[in-house]
Image (cartoon, rainbow, N blue to C red; front, top):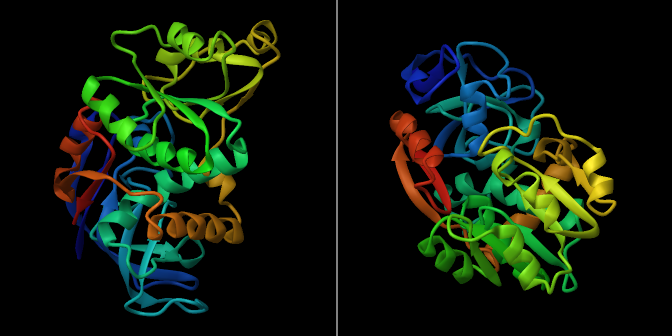
Length: 324
């Protein structure tokens, strides 16, 4: 018998209950892992509230974790008891132990701590596909990244700087502006006191940016489109302020023959080889010190409800982990 955070109904943080659950032995193709640390991500809020569906109720939520292999199921190769592993899918990480398909797990290299691994998989691999695949960012790229001081944002600032891009980041306070700049952001815009569209136009001499990375949703739409140059790309990869309703595709032509995409990490890493390549690229940059993972908040896993309140209240910066 182990403990996990489960929801029996969808709604606010109060729906998250710390309770005992039973686990079977690993089946064919599965691993049993004991979590060392669990990552906190905004997609967990979407699963809790029902914005994104869960497989069924009651449900153990959470998408990301790092743990130690306790047992290996039939047919599994490449893993053994005692290996440190990490993952960013499937759902079910808010637990002391869990069963997981071995195909969705990667080994954690030496030199990367469990807290770091738990905080970097979903956010770091998200940045990897955003900057390397969805839009190939390089020295000629000028980009706008919303929530630049968040977990994904701080990784993106460092990675984009490494690639040579000019980075404009939106933040909610001067403290967060300083944090984003310390991680490589070229210019910051405090959206609470500045008009981010006007400021982007000013910073780009009226030209607009090549790409906007937008995980905010309702509050930054359609302003994000107004920040783009003609033929620019809007990458909508989250809905922290709420979902965008009634999107009119005609806006893309009116605002400069723009491109738009709504990607997910799970599509970009659906194949095992893509997952491994993505994780290895991330591990390489972290081990070389090019990308540093800022774990700025730590909570006991049993206090996941408070972690959610702080995340939704924009009280967190960088990455957050929970310890079983």
